[in-house]
Each structure stands twice: as C-alpha cells, then as structure tokens.
Length: 187
Image 1: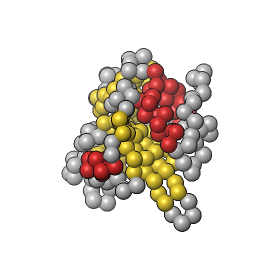
Image 2: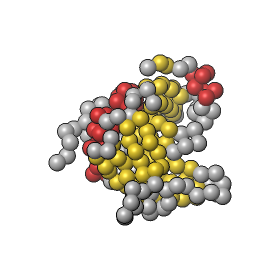
Image 3: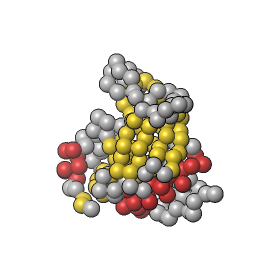
Image 4: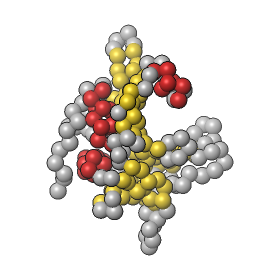
C-alpha cells in the first residue's frame, strides 16, 4: 500500500474535488470524498478496479447511510461508451459475475443514455446475494464478468483481479466508519 499525495491524486484524477483522498491496494483503488456543509461533514468512500476507458467494478458507501449490518455496499459493474456507440451490456440483459470458475452471481443491466447522448450501463447482483458476493471477492483470485446467454458462454465484459480487494474494502469501510466484518455465508 502507498498513499499518494493530494496533488498527485488531483493530477491523475481531475474529477475529484480538492478534499479527496486516494490509496492503492494491489489492483484496487480507494477514493474518499469529503463534503463539508454548515451542518455536518460527510464522506463518500469508494473502492474500484478497472476504468480508464474500460468497464469498472466498484463499491461505495456513504457515512450518513445505515451501512452494515443492515446494508452492505453492492459490487457494481459500470460501463460507458463513446457517443454514437452502444455499451457491451444492453438494458435488461442478464450478467454473470463468476469467481475463479467456482461461484456465480447474477444481475440485470440498467442501460441508459445521459443528457449528452452517451450510453451507460450498470449491473449489480441481486440484493440478497450481496454479502455472499463480497465474501467471494475477499477469498477469490479473480472475477470474470460476462453476459448470460441461454445456450452459450456469453460475451466477456470484464475480467478483474481481486488482488488488493480485501485491503481496499477494509480501508473504504474504515474511512466511512463502518465495520469491515462480514457475516457467515447465507445458506
């Protein structure tokens, strides 16, 4: 783990506000955005991998939300396309999150166009699978994200290393004041 200076983080990530912090853990990055108002200071903590023009997989928590054990952050696939092009994942399409070819979780894509005409798609697992997926992310080596086809392997969307995920998850949760503990797997 190394902590980048704020100036370096702002140089590499111009979309971050001046009150952001940034860390790297293996193949994962953690961003903490601090929002200050006259009433309170709040934090949005995000762990992610991928990006830079490719799909990304991220989790976010907000320190003023309920958080664990009532609500855990959902690993969410984010994809964007250049104007005039479609995303690989289409609205309503089933997507599989496959861990080390041993476990799979599924979600349905929410595809949309923003005000500027860019296509976007987001996919998260079913809410009841979130904790088990987080447990696989902590224990696994890699995740293969693919479209689900009825009679075939589907099309690859993203393959991500889980190297550094456990440390990134812990940092994200700690910075927003939540426990890093996950309950035992659901039966």
